[in-house]
Image (tube, rainbow over all chains, first blue to last red; front, side, top):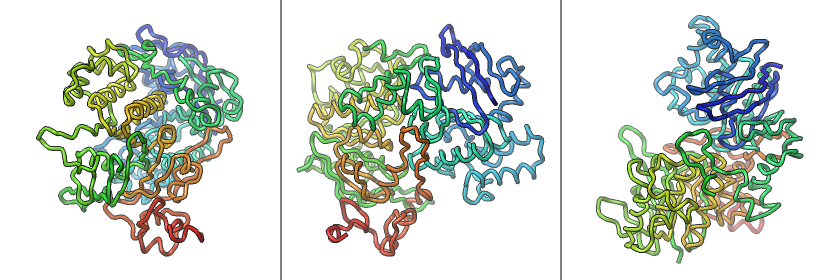
Length: 286
Length: 307
């Protein structure tokens, strides 16, 4: 087991965001984390990297190869972040720095974490760009993010995440900002890299179709708790928890076969802005 | 006569030092009253430019846009008589004025049509929000609620054609289907047409009566939603639908469409889809298929019987 999260609880300003999450990631496996917005999927991912928002308190345990990440000193945590655990964010238009060449963004952390020289870092960066199938890797090295399309940018973001050969990759909605045709390519890439490099991937997504395509294990979250966890086929085909069933039933594809009018008003969709103080949620409205 | 008819519309973006980009290259489209038309396509294919042109927000290079038989003129400084077309924009964080109460913003729409009997609160109620929200400011709401307010504001002007330019893509996944269905219900109830633009095919399928698929500035396939979904004919439509991963738990990776969308400033010769098309023929590289409802040489109307 590469990464084990046990009984993780996170509170922000007296509000319980996570209420005891258990997850385990294994080498070469993709673990999918599903759930509606506000259920704590992203917070779980951020907690692993120690990137929780200011004022958040986390208890429980996140163990990476015998080390406890929650209590690790900042200096040591910096060795882990970007080195052993890497992250791919949702929107590649904002996660890449617009004013630095992608070559610079690819080599900066590599030189810091791996202590390699300029030349070596460059060679490795070009190799990585080839691996994520960026055409003309040599020329691409010196270009800026705006010169690439959305799908290419996300591939570059994945290359940056993989630069220091991490053991764990956390992908937070990596294809949500992309078109379906581009999404297909990025999903294939993620799956291929996971198999090839033996990465342990935590894939956070709300899209059960994406989940079904790439995840080996699926966990479903609701209100800061994992309500169901198991192999992909079992969770998506024979869901045991009523919440998972309602999520699946609310999909347009199944909606047309089972029911027409009522299912369009998602039972799962409450449009809650949970955890955002000062916003009014739809729940109070009904 | 249809409510909105777009006829061979061409829109070019000109910027100094760059080649002319033909964002919309000869599009014809009709929207009838009480009908929901979904316009889908990848980003950069010209969907939004088309929507903006229909509202008069983009200058037209060639072709005609007629609303109720009257040409749509570009929006200028002068007060506009044409308030029958209203638009809901992509990002409700940007389209609502953060410094004004939402009730006042909705009242703007009511004032343009001289409606003195309807209160902004009535419209909030129609979009499923409580009446007393009218006195609040936009920052007090979540994304889904803001988009509902933007819809209420558009509805206040009694539109006969509502245009949604990616109205759900800035929202949380859980709110998307809700807001889309709400837009459909409100438009159809008031007898207005709805042109719904989105790159999310699953949502368009949920609400649209007809689907138009756009690729690189041209509409490649138009048809009844159920028909297009069950039997997509254009290779691009097939690729789009095939790329949607199915939640069947089988772990099937979706099919990948090779290549990238070509630069609209330099579209390929012949059919625009030919460099990426799996069924490419010789004629596709030479001549552009200029017919409908499926703009593909495999589905040429005269040959349809024999093919």
